Image (cartoon, rainbow, N blue to C red; front, top):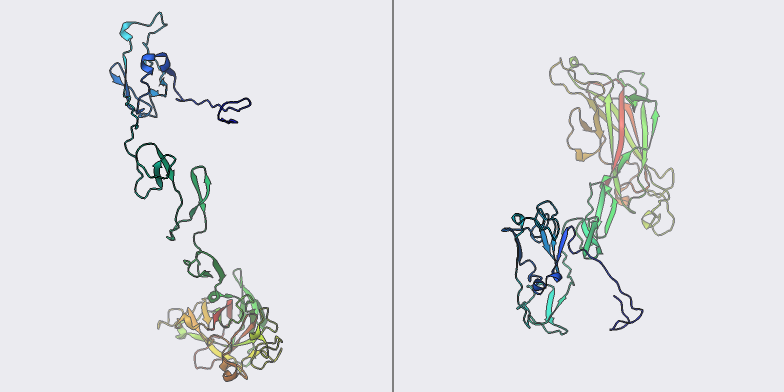
Length: 455
């Protein structure tokens, strides 16, 4: 109701709302029509009552909410059942003048308590529980009290507690007396392919988080491959490089090899330094019979070249030649520009790829064609293992001992930087040892590289 003053006046607006006090009730007994009872009704407390019909206590709404027989209102009694024989009058009742036979008379008793009222009320004391946000005072004062006319105040101000609790549901909005929750990102974790850095003082993966590329994991395939008197053939649906056969006892061998290159990603940190690891999957194209009684070796030559990026995208003084000059030239030992500024090897690495394993039983095949093996220069892979992996390409490149005109005392240890081009060459060659030679063509597939940070 809205009013213009403390008294009702013309043009005041009134709001009215009709509310069903007992939804689902079939009949109602109005206490106002029974003056002797209405002066004591309703019970106090409201549930301190019992309805007995023919000696049987009935089910009240406050105790049997799903299937009640009756309920108590503020000024009425409500009856819910309208089934035959379950109504508050004789089952053969016809009218007021014909109320039915005496044998079906309903004997109904309504027992209830109404507590007496006094000047101080029924509550003898009211006080908040320990650590409760409630505060009880005398009405219209700030004086704490437990009896008399009381006023209840509540303080819902909350304190922060950095408990680092787990869970992705947090409170996001308020709807009436409900705090509504919704999902958030609780924590960011890495599978190893990225680096997750949190702000100082924050738990790992929480707060303000920086995601960056996992430098330890930078790897990829060679971007371009050029064949040098070699062939490209298919193994199923996969192309591979086939180097021609080589027989050191023959004078008709033809040089056969390939060149491959890749670029060190520009997105790496400015000033970062790396060594390069290379990996090939290699296989022979012909069996080695057990009657030969020894595994065989294919001779190869391996070399590399590094072409520094002439104008680095992420340029700073570390790239300038001389430092502070403002001229961004190629990074190399001589301060020269292309092409003399390339880092080249004095001589290729000549090595031998072993094929097969001889168990001592000449009835067993030593090597089966197309059985793959990993060839690499990664010392972290451990010792060589027959028919599985072999390290014959030296160490991580570039290496100062491999390079022409390199002075480690002046230039330090060589490395590659963001933007550098790295090229490799692999070709067939004779053996340097007295091992038995594998003369059939050999295949190369799955050529890839990985960067190793230089600290």
